[in-house]
Length: 246
Image (cartoon, rainbow, N blue to C red; front, side):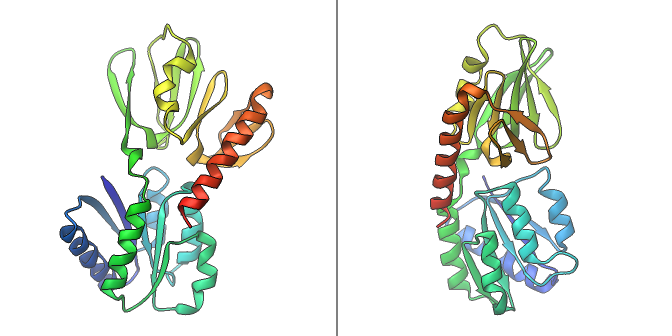
């Protein structure tokens, strides 16, 4: 399901944006979860554990500007769609540091917003709602792929590190780690960079010759013999991601 976050410190503007979006969704028979935020601090806290396909952000807000908020969203999620809606047209050039899909000046023109929503939704990666079933020692856990930060093979089990900080451990597996994670690796966001590690490329913050640093600071090793292949795959991923946001 499409997930939309709206952040605006003016209650009346927040309400107008929400009404327009709900009208758009009704007109196009789309289901979506909409979350409203009246302060940038609240959305910053939320995106530590939740992700959204689409963000609609004001720019002039207390404490944290919409531009800084957009940069932080982009650091965590390279593929989310960002729309700026503001009364201040002079920030347009600065705003593009967050690679927004559009920059709308208030009062919002509904037709222009609707056209932008159509474009943003067409680019949104809704496939991230795919899930993976993990058999643990005492239950069966169904995990969204988008929530997996990385997987680690350890003592014949697989540890799943999730975006909310939780760790889920599989029961003992008989097959190889590569075979066990093969369904996950079919998703273009995931890459096996070591015999014992699979990473979610959406969570990568830094790439080095010997490791990935993930959002939150976790460091994942890259096997020496796999470096060239990992580098090429990661570069291809970044190029594909960049072209999808053009």
